[in-house]
Image 1 (cartoon, rainbow, N blue to C red):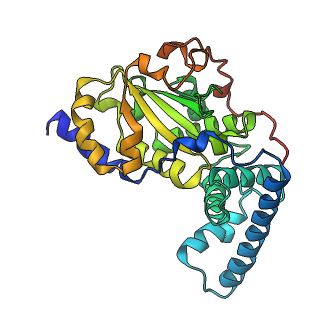
Image 2 (tube, rainbow, N blue to C red):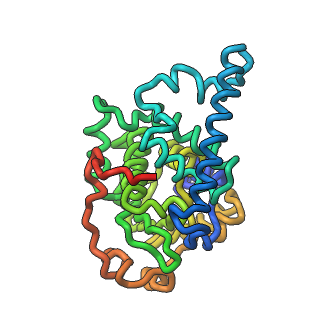
Length: 307
């Protein structure tokens, strides 16, 4: 199998066709954060959460719950010490993040909220006896992915990824996804508007090859960001792409949704300055922004904002 063919096969296996891309206007707020209008919707969402719990609780008791409902609401999940309580400070915070990330659509916010609660249990988020702590720290300390608070001109936060320096064979997809969550968690705590403003991704592909691309890891990333973690992905800029990526990209885009095709672009460093001010663009990408690297500290003891 040629390198070109293998790249395309891995690309299809990774599930890029399912990646949800959000409109550029996501950088603009619909409500003033914490305003009366926003809190009214939040209270409505809280009521919907309570209603769903009551309804599914009855179905579980009567043996009428679907397999998906049993997984999300069964005792094995909800009795876990890692399962956030709705009325806890952290539970309220993440419920609001879900509301904002789904642009105040209560039905969609409910789905992502319950998905997120199960995600935390499945990935051991918040475990005081974290058996995966050292491996998660190791991924973060490589500093190949980051989100340090700098934004583009629309207010979306910049996610940087050095693809050529990341070797997925060194870590399981689960560990990499835990590191992904840590970075998003840190971003949300520092910048609670990130859930609605969203992110854009700058992928530095210098030196990128087959050794840097694992479909299982990419698939878990995509599933997490699309369905389980309240974050809006606004688009991708890929820089320093090697010849093989330039060659397969037109074909790979055929497997993507239209929005993804339109928002995934191979660009030069200088092109980034059209969308990002120089003082918000990382030094590596041609700007003057210098990161504080607080985002790699694990576990994160930053305070949870009050909702």
